[in-house]
Amino acid sequence: CPELALLALQGPQAVDALQRLAPGVDRLTFMTGGHFSVASGSGPIDLFVTRSGYTGEDGFEISVHEQHADAFARLLLAQPEVKPVGLGARNSLRLEAGLCLYGNDLDTTTTPVEAGLNWAIQKVRRTGGARAGGFPGADVVLAQLAGGETAPGRRRVGLKALERIPVREHTLVQDTSGNPVGEVTSGLLGPSIDVPIAMAYVRSDSAVPGTRLQALVRGKPVPMEVVGMPFVPHRYHRG
Image (cartoon, rainbow, N blue to C red; front, side, top):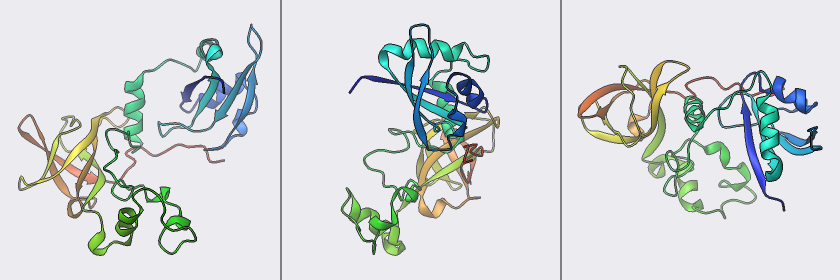
């Protein structure tokens, strides 16, 4: 198996730029993919392209053999719509889109129910399904899905600051009486909405949208409100 590089091309004009190099990619829809070939000065470059990404925007993730990665990246950058960006830009977009970052918002102690990722558990693997259970942590996860006394004690939520003060990961979250209820896992000033936003895990009784909480930033309580996610609507191309 050859060593591959992965390039991400994201944003509303991604399809225009890539279609110019790889005709037919415009027919892909969200989470579908296919093989394409791009002409270059040193011969054709083979790609596997999926219409997906980690930004909440329309876009593509492109697998290319490592020996062609630099040449293909330069072909992309030659397109008038394309500019290079770093991980900071990607991180701000994924947070605005309400997407988890492993190591921050997910780790080996997090269940999909706590994280609000129930969609990742197929019905066939749930209680009563033809292949129920049998996956790591199934006993805990299925009990949490059942709810009641076995429902999770914490939930991942979106938070929006009511003051213009960014709230970073590991910041303590309190109720309005100053009692600890959770911790921020990701946070920044959302560049698209110009408001400080965050993800946090909080006690389930504090996870209802509209609940007022506060984040303790350098000893100062910053008022926050629990809000639904994504903070910015997804713009995936579903056809």
